[in-house]
Image (cartoon, rainbow, N blue to C red; front, side):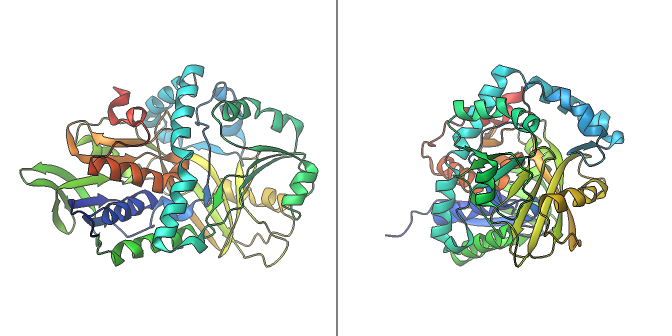
Length: 416
């Protein structure tokens, strides 16, 4: 039986959230135009660690502020701020610190878990529908710790995960060696998220979903959308290639969403946690089987198809400043210590922009002043994880179906 015709829709932004949403809407009977200024997977979705995580931990945790000075002073630490950007990011940081209160942490963790708890199943359905099952691996997500102190510092996080039913296993040194025998045997403790999944080539996956979308009749337009306006006959997106009109529009432009969302009544404190990666040569042997995070140093080694990816760092410097690869390059000796067979010859260096809100929760749902404009942005470190889940929720909103997850925590005007 043919799908019911649902009208026309524009999806702005072609990262994993936008591409998944365009595919879900096209499948549901919409005629969809997917618009991006460069093309599918040209932004933040390209450079992540490839993990699909059943997680619930917000960035703002009780006592986090105590560790900020040491992280900033560490030349290879996971946090940096361009000091010229401090006046602009300071209001965001104040809101962030307010979110570290225990009652807010519990709320934010619950809201994250409601989304990530559905992610693995949603990824499975999408990959099967698009014929991409071979691109996802069931290998989990591993975090390792050299010291008792480093592991003990995760106690509050583990308690939070337990309270919110985010599955994990605590590993001994022997357990770690069984999972990853080529790691340096210096790691005494591990946390293994065995329900997580892994994408060895996120770029190929996003392009695969985009191709499946086009095969269903969807259209991809390369344009930089500068404004959105309501018209008598629908919604218009105005950009570098002219005006595109449709019945409905979904905004999935990640860290670039603030101004466009503001045009439809949402004053969101959106900023970017800039993240870096280095690509290192492929390891034919003595490599890793899954993404592995060094707990004390907060970097990840990921065995991608085209090489080992070293990802790390949160940098606050906005969208305009150029990259600074100094810190992540200083992590190369640490990565070599972690995985002794690692070839640290740099193949590629990359900077991405995680769209982040102070409460670590994305914005998903209708704009405050027009139900035909739907927001889907702000996924911070869970963007790759939550692409298909967000797409399903947006689809349900747009076809008038009650979403399986209450959307109140994700509303755009929750910040006042």
